[in-house]
Length: 341
Ligand SMILES: Cc1cc2nc3c(=O)[nH]c(=O)nc-3n(C[C@H](O)[C@H](O)[C@H](O)COP(=O)(O)OP(=O)(O)OC[C@H]3O[C@@H](n4cnc5c(N)ncnc54)[C@H](O)[C@@H]3O)c2cc1C
Image (cartoon, rainbow, N blue to C red; front, top):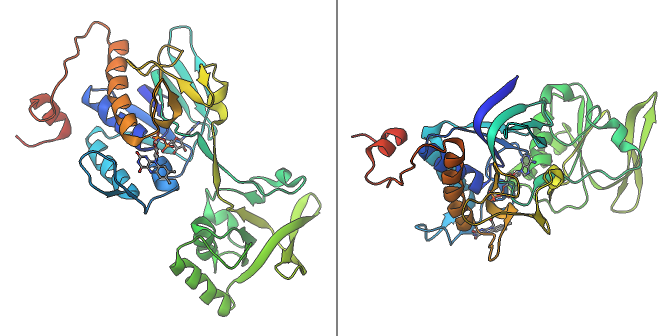
């Protein structure tokens, strides 16, 4: 089913989230798509616990706290989030509108698009073994979409971060066996998760091996095992029906680079009046855009989102006069925000 909307926002980082607010003030509703399973972009993915010191009005705010506050601020506008989906294709239609599709089968029809894609979508770092891609999404997984598909299987989890530890812990007692392989005894995951997993290994519920994957075994077209070299360079053969790879994520501009927009290096060129790209109706805000003097800062993205919202309103309703309204004093803004009289 195609979802019809005023605006599609690609990216739910801080700038994409604030874009929802600015559009909402002008009565425009947005559908928001992000490749990650959670909102917040770099703030949530790369530095959730770090303090930020240059958000106006906050002498200090944690990155995750900023995202939580943005979510609270946009709540009155009830945005629709489509998470864990990457926008794959964008098609310009003859009437000036756009059709977008996601890698999860989502389809959107809209008259305006805001690209708030930051440094691009975060792609999982792959397990590099010749021919292993034949087993992707059948026996080798980079995301867990449906945990129950791993129940009753011999599962090997690769990595030492939060995703690796969280999924390894969740599958204990449900998978036929759980083995965690990490390249060293130093983990990036929360210490409490590491302790919990070690306790399970001591109780015989799971296995922990330090080393790297050298090769895989297969039979009848199926993956059957992995060969692991431990830190003493000893090799071990391990039964593996499902392999969950959590080696981390790297940002890639990905499909956005192929949409024919004028780029400056890896950023999308925009004007500084509307933050519109070289294609009318497609705007770009936040880290992904470029103009003379661009600074990749959250506060710059917030300003860009405000001006882009006004430009979109004018694009969609060219005959309507758009008044700038102060949120402090405007009764109509108060109504939209649910502020009591
Ligand atoms: C360690 C660190 C510290 C920082 N400290 C500060 C600071 O103190 N102050 C400051 O102002 N800035 C700081 N920054 C920079 C700040 O985080 C960025 O400026 C900000 O995150 C940009 O927001 P954004 O919304 O433009 O993009 P992002 O936060 O990068 O979010 C973009 C989102 O778009 C999604 N996306 C991309 N392409 C697609 C696609 N095709 N389909 C679906 N989804 C897609 C991505 O998954 C991502 O979630 C810091 C950055 C880092 C890494």
